[in-house]
Amino acid sequence: MRSKYFASLAAILMFFTMALSGCGSDKPGSASKAERKKDELVLSIEGEPDAGFDPATGWGRYGSPLFQSTLLKRDNNLNIINDIATDYSVSDDGKIWTVIIRDDVLFSDGKPLTAEDVQFTFETAKKKGSVVDLQILDEIETKDNRKVVFTLKKPQSTFIHSLIVTGIVPKHAYGKDYSKKPIGSGPYELVQYDNGQQLIVKANPEYYGKKPFFKKLTFLFLSEDATFAAAKAGEIDVAAIPASFSKQSVPDMKLKVVKSVDNRGIMFPCIPAGSKTPSGLPAGNDVTADPAIRHAINRGVNRQALIDGVLEGHGTKAYTSADNLPWWNPETVTKDGDASGAKAMLKNAGWKDRDGDGILEKGSQKAQFSLYYPADDGIRQSLAIAVSDSIKPLGIAMEIEGASWNKIEKKMYSNAVLLGWGSHDPHEMYNLYSSKYAGIDYNNTGYYINETVDAYLEKALLSTDVNQSMEYWKKAQWDGKTGLSGRGDAPWAWLVNIDHLYLVKEGLDIGKQRIQPHTHGWPLTYNIEEWKWAE
Image (cartoon, rainbow, N blue to C red; front, side, top):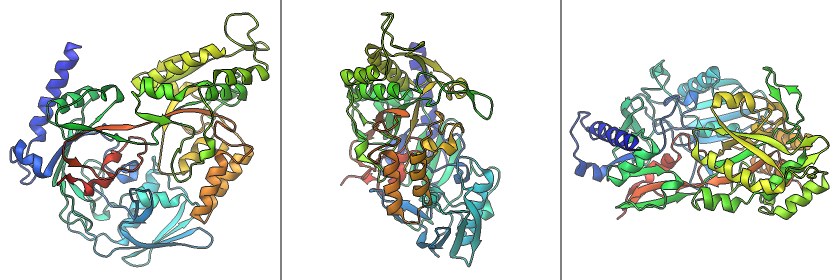
């Protein structure tokens, strides 16, 4: 422990030697710590983006693009509003999306942002084919400097999310190093990026929107321990911390709790063993293929105990992948922590302990299976242990195993896995539950198939009316008879939504925070223009 502690202190000293270098003059040492308190902030709010700061490869999909602007955006109540766009329309058949953009937007290098840049951005993102899935696009045309026409191969209601999260890049300044040297029309521009260490940005004087109060932001890429140590030393203004640190007080800082849809749940293989994925990996599991096992776990797990014991009280019960979002169906909330009800489900399905070893059997099959979790994730480990302990009295033996993602990728089609999701895009629900995505990457790894659910998901996706699509997303979760939630087929046992916890300097107002998605991409900064010191 001592070596880890001193390593953390050494990291902090090294980072702050760099972080306190000036931004206004772009020369080291031009800003003192006292001056930094006025219009500069230092933040350590989760890690460094793996793929850098290029929207074409996913930057900005879970938070503010920071350097870039988007056509549309969500307000703090998740309503869709204009950003670069001044208007948009969708054809009656849902295939043609016409967007009109502002004529006063400049990139940070002073060049104007035009429809051609929008076209270039989306064509580049489609071509790269990374986490930005734009294969639905058939054609993109520019009619003039302000009008862009997107033609889809077929209607897709969730295409609007691509307009919300895809930051616009400059055609004239986009190259192979763009992810490390981004230029955009967002509220900030890059000053210095030290891979693995820090990112320094300054306010973009060309920004067309509300000018941010803070002229310089320094993001440090520190471990959780180093972040907390720096916060206690008074060297950080905003720090993301795990629940395990939340009970400790830090001088001159307050704990900010932000609700999220950053969920954790157990994915169950829903088909019997014996199948293979397209790549030849084993798929299916004879135990979890029995709906009674999945329902019993959903019913028997005490989610509040998980929140209190693992998350120090900082979380909410999870029932789907989209709790409390506009497309969530609240009818999916079911009773939990009910051991007697869970036992009755198992008994009625023919599961009995015939040999007296405490593990139920059905025919020659024992109620025994493995649960994998990433070995370097403390919260998932604790959740796995707690769930395993809580269902043991039901007669279900769930053996937990921490592993690397490489190993999990080979096991996740035939074993239960503790995964995390959470997005402001309902398309995530389609990816997780549609039979079309069965066995594809990390999506429907359990091979869940329900024709009724599939039909609802397709109708939601193909809908030309956003409000109507919401009703289909909700029916896919539970329509009164069936659905993808625990009340329906229970292909998952969703456990908790994790509150995002931040230590914030006393007097710093970070505005109204929306319910946050999965933590990739610093969702806290989405409203960075609203941040200021309290009067």
